[in-house]
Figure 1 (cartoon, rainbow, N blue to C red):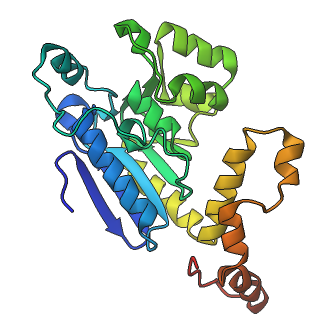
Figure 2 (figure 1 turned 135 degrees about the vertical axis):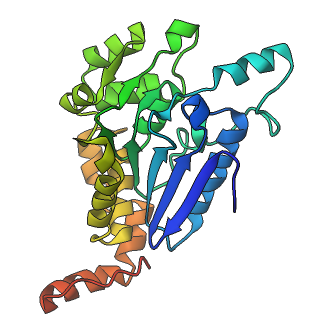
Figure 3 (figure 1 turned 90 degrees about the vertical axis):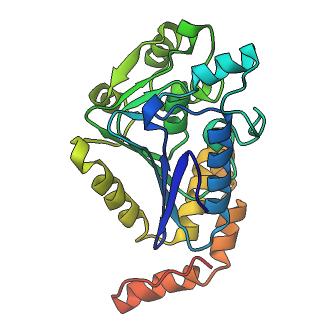
Length: 267
């Protein structure tokens, strides 16, 4: 399907999701968020897709977050970019409130990731940042708050005092500082961004898809309970249970014994 505000491509087992509003640094209005939600629905339901790479169109912005001009238009009644209603159940960009998407998502941050754009980045599992990337939650500077996960996810990703400094002042940090605090996995030259993200994707795809999804599910759900409870849960997670009942559960040890690469089927 062709979208107005998102480029969605499928190449083998990888989904490429590109926010396509470069004229506003890929800021999202409600219609764009609705399109993103449809894309993530398709990604979740397509058994041939194992991993997604999320990035922004152009060379300046991953996403500048909420399109404030569209927000202002709602207040004056013109409703620009809001033909399908404001509410997107799965959150900003169709992703920030989506807690049942166990397939891994790599964020390739090509520029400014501000406000909701930073919240989208925080919702990814792995972040690769261009040297020109910047991260911030400037919502208080315009009378708002980063309630699409920013004020909750950021303190879970970096030290609390650093997170609170960013949240309370609206200051942003560059890619190298983000790496220093553990917010991103790797910082690369801008021209190497997508190839590096693809390298990570290919490395993940060497692993059993259901094992990867089950590991993500267990890791993230385990953050919400005491350590003893998380460990005590064992493999009592739906996706892990599906993996242990799959052909891949047998294929992995067999391929190791045969000294060959496994042929994963994700089933």
